[in-house]
Image (tube, helix red, strand yellow):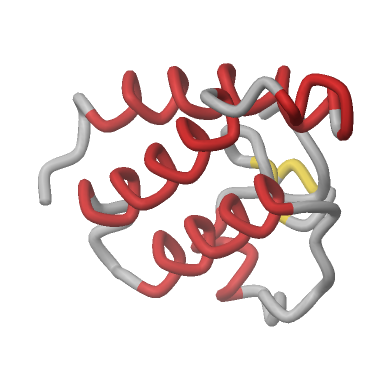
Length: 105
């Protein structure tokens, strides 16, 4: 629905498109497209994991993304070297934590 960061981060935001990851995959989309930075690559991996399962996103995929986003958010050096990624890491981390509450597997 909305881009949070890069090409891959945001709810229903996949490869710069307003589309769910599963729908993107089923329409022939590829998860090989480049990502902007470390956070964007983590979001791409999360999207790929979510798209690969008929059940959708899993708590395990969410946990992996949360850990990476949290590591970025915990490193103030990124506030200077990549401020957009640093700021987005908080949004991604907290957004996935909320979404994770709805996961069934």
